[in-house]
Image 1 (cartoon, rainbow, N blue to C red):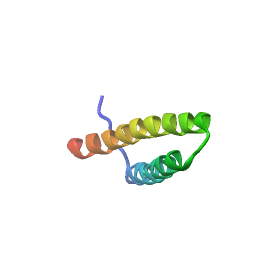
Image 2: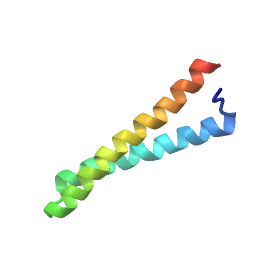
Image 3: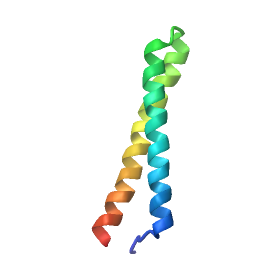
Length: 68
């Protein structure tokens, strides 16, 4: 099955990638500053999930370029 994205879908992916990068930066920074261990654990989980989501979004964009 061919997975081709329209221009608007590609722009949406770029927008999501930008938002995820911003969230990852904030979670990483705040986890260093947090004093509560439970909050640090939550932020650490968010960092791990954020990295995974960013990699998935990048994969979508990479696959799109390869199929054009």
